[in-house]
Length: 388
Image (cartoon, rainbow, N blue to C red; front, side, top):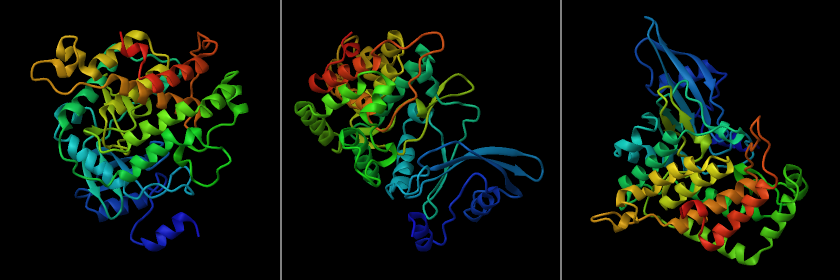
C-alpha cells in the first residue's frame, strides 16, 4: 500500500486537495468555516510547490465581490514524489512561526498574514501576494536591486532582534530541522548508491560524470572534497551546532525561491516551513551563499550584509560593542554556514538553474572556484565579502 493510501485509510476525514479540483476545495473550505455568506471557490491555480500543495484560490460572492488567498496543505509526503516521507509536524511548526513573527512588525510586514489554520486537515490559509514573482531569475543572470538586498538583510536583522532570547514556544518543527540537517550536512557527501528516500527532497547527489557535464573538473573536485577527512569533521561539527536550540527564530530556507517582488516594488518572504529556533547566522549564511551562487554584484552583496549583520547599528563596530547593544553576529559562523550551503547547491542533489546571462558567458571554472571558496570558508570561517 502506498504512503498516501495508508494515510487516507487512517485519516478518512482529510481530503487530499489539488488545484484541479476546485469543487473539492470549495467543499473543504466551507466545512472548516473559511467561506463567507454566499461565497464560493470559483477557480484554483497551482503555485508550484514541490513540498506541499500550494494554490491560489479565488473566492467570489453571489453579489459580485471577490478576493484571493493562498491555500497550503502540508501532508506527510513530498508533493513532487509521494514515495518520499516528510515530517508530520511541519504543519504545526509553520503555523507557530507565523504566530511568532506576527509579534514583530518589521518581519510580519514582509510576510503573508496567516488568515486561518486547521490542524485536522493540515491546512493554512495565507494572504495572497498576487502578481509577485519569486526571484529564481537571479540564477539566470538577473540582478537584485541594492534596495531589495538591503530589505532582505533588514528582514533577517529584525527577525533576530525581535525573537532573540525568547523562550522557544513550539518544538513541533524539530523534524524539519533534522531534515534540513540531512540535506546540508549529510546528503551531499553520501554515496549515490543509497536507495529509498534517504536523501529527502533533494534526491541523491549527481554522479561525477554529471557534475563534469555541468563544468569540466567539478566531478573530480567533488570527489576530493568528499574524501577530505578534515573537511568532513568540520562539516560534522557545524552540523551538530545546527541541530542545537539556537538563540532566535530563523526562516530556515532563505533563498531566492522564497523571495518575492511585490507589485509595490518591495520584497516579501514566504514559505517558512523549515523555520524554528536556531542560529541567525544560518539564515544570513544561506542568503549570502545564494547571492554568490547567482553571481550578484559586490555592491548588492555588501548591501545585504550591511543590513543583515547590522554594522551600521554600532557605527562600524560589532553590534554588541555599541552602548546597550545586542550580542553581535558571529561572522565566521556566517561564513561556515554559507560554505555548506554552497557545497550543497554545487555538488549535492539540490541543484540550481545556474545559467549564464544571455549576454555573458559564465566564467571558466566558476563552480570549481566557488567550491574551493566554500571549502576554505567551512574550515577557516573566513569569506572575503565578510571582511570588507
